[in-house]
Amino acid sequence: MDVYLLRRAAQVPPLVIALPTEDRRRAVAFYRGALGIEPFGELADDGVPEPLRYRLDARTTLMLVPAGGFGWVLGDRAPATPGTNECLLGLAFPTEADVIAVVDRARAAGATVISDPAPQPWGFTATFADPDGHVWQLTVPS
Image (tube, rainbow, N blue to C red; front, side):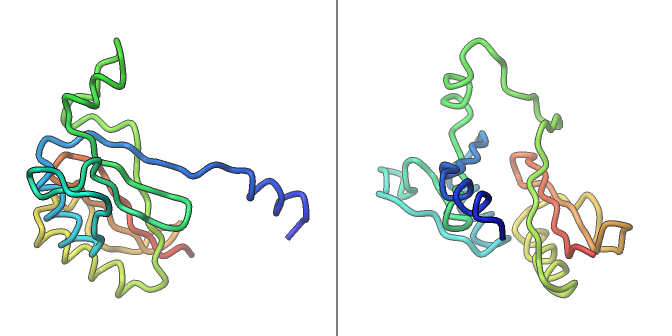
């Protein structure tokens, strides 16, 4: 890799993806069951870490914010209404079997499967919505 790109990558700050959630406990159960990820941080009175965060990789964190608090952060901008998506969250997997397994776990955990696993021109892919309506795309790139 180019030395410039290596230096530039080291300067990129960590990425936090923040999404609203209506129910923190439901979110923990869903992400544990569907993606097999565990939240980190000190537990609040409800037994769920506050803030509710998941480490996706060394530089990326998913944070689920109670819907009321999410609106506060946005200021005078309204959060998207249920069923409206401004963002597609993507995860890349090495095999088609991995995508199928995650979709099966997500469905069992309460996801709405939008598109079942199938080959597409850009790779083997599937999409589902979590209980708060956030859409995840799983792909094995071609």
